[in-house]
Length: 563
Image (tube, rainbow, N blue to C red; front, side, top):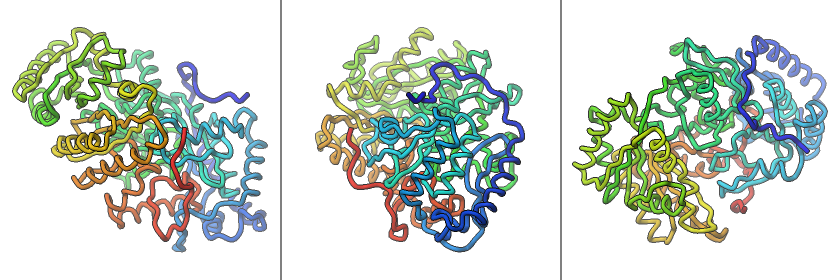
């Protein structure tokens, strides 16, 4: 039986990769020249201009100084290609799988039906889903390089996978066949630079495991981005994630990813004005430009925190409280501030894991930083503002353990929400608007969901205008109803100068909204970058970029995923 490359214990620390990059690039150039002379008659090396561009003008692999990220070097040709290139034939894909099995160890390649299906479908996503043709479990950057050489040779699409926690169909398979590269086995810390407060990691490491290891080392810093449990660094780069800490520390698109080393996106220095910030191009690209194998992360000092919960008669009073708290003298102490609605509080009571029975009203969860005396001082300021805006209750954690229990009640939102309907499933989605419009968005969304008899909970990162709706249902027949509700929510957010997604990413589920949100000019520029970096169009095709008539290609069939 295939051993899935997911760590069952804390990953070990491995040594740096050193200077293998130049050798990999030189080998790729040799491969490209050899392909031009020996593969001319092969179906995968003839005909299409993207392939000619790749053979004549691109390097087969590009691994940066620290190991980094696989991608194609872009062609300088002015010849236009379609966004989704002409892929190989079924015979090409069969040959590719055979070559993968010949190249990699047996435990790194699987065509087991359950494995390929499990990597293409998600119980958390209700978008079209297809099984992959083969799943690869790399253990090194060299393994990824080998996979990409074969994928390039046979024009076989490639989809990256690691934590499997994304919600918008990001890792679904491709109609016709594809290679899934499961990065979860590459989950090691490579090097901690203690004096610089940064760390080089492989992309399959989870943010929770990383912080646990740093704690075990007694290193007083942490990686502050905190998306859902199970998320890994590679996926966090792909979706441009954030989390509850965003009000204090920002998002993946801030400054936490120093270097993804493409051919070197930038140096390890804390700041640089040397050319484009190429790192940012790959953050939020959802695996459509390359596969991240390693990343250099900035770390933040650990600061003691406590938790407080306040409850209100309505969302407007809660939101106005947050606005004043963030601009008060206590504002700098706020690490997180989360808005949850009355349905969420009822779900928390029903779920039965909390030691408390909450008042079932719209509420705020605060995480407050500082020394014990500073925490108490700022809590008094916050409590006064809560009272001023009509708050009903205010509770400050009495101990570290009490604070952890309070925050746990917030973090299990997905599971507690499903307690509202026994035996149910949930469609989780997010949008984001300017902070001042969040109360309007929450109010109008709750009204809309009630009118359509949809059971839901709402959780908002109220400090930055981002909120999540959990739509609870039981039967597949209800999925179109949920989809329509999400569409109305997105339309509402964009109408308020917001975005279709604050942190979940686009994938399959949200790409139809990008033309309206960003405009044709911006979307077409994104597509041009895609064509330049990935001229064959094999990197996670069909995700992120909205379909348009000139693309002339769809990678997924109709309908919704069924579970």
